[in-house]
Image (spheres, helix red, strand yellow):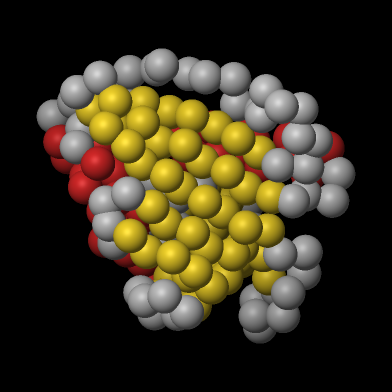
Length: 166
C-alpha cells in the first residue's frame, strides 16, 4: 500500500491508495451499489444494515447511512451529497457525521475516489478532507484502512481475487 497520508504533507487531507486485482467497474460497483456497500462499509467491528442506508443515486442526490458497533450497539450516522458519478472512473461526495435525526454533527468533508487501470487490476486513490485537526484525520485513516481491508475481502469473495498492495 502506498503511504496513506499525502506525501505533500497536507495536514488536513487524507490520501490513501489501494490496488485491487479486479476491473475498475467491480470496484466502482462496490462503492456505488448499496447491495455491495453494506458488505464492506465501516471498520471491523461495525456493520451497516441495509435498512439503515438510503441513497438517491444521481449527481446532486443525497445519501445517509448508519454504522452499528456490533459489541455495544452504538450507532454512528453519516450522510452527504453525491457530487460526481463517472463510472467506472470516479465518485465524489460530501460526508458529515449526523445525529440520528439527520442534523449535522461535524464539519463537512469532501471524499474523492478515483479508479484507474493498474497492473492488470485497479488502483483506487481515495482523498478526504479537509479535517479540523490531525486527531480527526488519524481517526478517519484508521477507519478507512479497516474498511478498505473489508473491501478487499469483499472483492475477493465476489470476484475470485485477493488484494495486492502497491
